Amino acid sequence: MKTIYSKLFLSSLLILTWLPFLGFAQLDNSSFYPKKELLSFYDSTLKVNQSSNQRQLNLEIDYFGFFRNREFFGTIADGYTLFGSQFLSKFSYSADTTLKISAGIFLRKDFGSEANNSSFNQIQPYFQFLYIKNKHQFIFGNLEGNLQHNLIEPLFNFENIINRRLENGVQYKYLSKNTTLDTWVDWITMIYPYSDFDEELHFGLNIERNLITSKNKKKWKSTIPIQLTAIHKGGQINTTDTPLVTIFNAAIGNKTTYYFQDNEGNNTSYLNYIRTHIYGLFFTDNSSTPSFDFENGMGFYANLELATKKHQLMFSYWRGQDFVAPLGGDIYSSASRIFDPNRENEPLRNLLILRLLTNFTIPNIAKDDAKIVFRATPFYNLESQEFNFSTGLYAIFNANFLLKKFEK
Image (tube, rainbow, N blue to C red; front, top):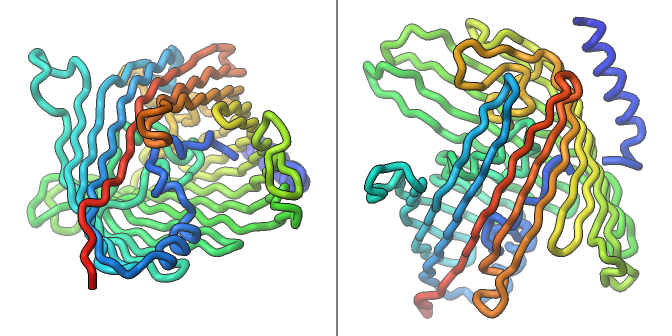
């Protein structure tokens, strides 16, 4: 076991030596969110500060239709299909250029989930307090979370956008010219005196520091990202005698991007950019009683991404030894997640992964507010010599309507 860990460590060290020439560990998921939420916080702040000091009342709507099919046949992850719609509607009141309060409702309907198809699978309220000051952003209530955390898929499952769209808690974001930071606490389960279940909360951190930026209209950019996630389950006022659960995951690496631009910032090629990503990942289980067969593990994740205006193609290699990330994608785990009680673990996961994403914009309707996204992910297990794949088709509509301005 120590020999395997040593090989993983030395491989990671060797590749990290070449980081300036390497380096995106997931496809750009910005298509799944409204444009206003896609702006970097720094840029959006500048835009807000340039506006007048009028108070505003807005209506924001977000429709997300999903069809995701997993054809998985191995011992780690089950195959299944997710098919349905989500709808989020919220009113937001901007008290001034720094403060916004929002309230709304979130609905989810899985197709075929009821005999008469008349009930919702999920109905949740939405509340958010947002405070902006220069490069800082503080959020209380519903977070700007999920895929917007920009965590790599071994640490954060893409399917959370379907299965757990809303996150609740507190969040702090910071963005300057050379540093971006997103840290949050997502409160999953609340307990009260004599509750017969545990409280559960998730913690996350994603910080990225600019390493190199070329002077010619930023043709080259290289950054060092550090990502952390943690899960805690327990409690002092509940009646359960289950052991305390504390699990940590971490990743550190490099992201390097070359943009096909001339000195005036204009695109000079069919490609928008080419990007490389490399990460070393770590797992440790500090629970009172181990939650898995593995208490510590490591992983190596390398990616090459090509992107045009509408298409993204990414080649990935994953090697994980005794690696478990409860919040991460299923296929990266060494611990089995299948429904069968007689499941078997795979201590070594050795995968070749191909990702394809295509955006189909809908002209003459809502410009960039409406789109259809196709995503496919075939992968090959080098250890078991098995081929599996997943596909997804998503319909997205986001819009923000100004209802009223209040003059001071």
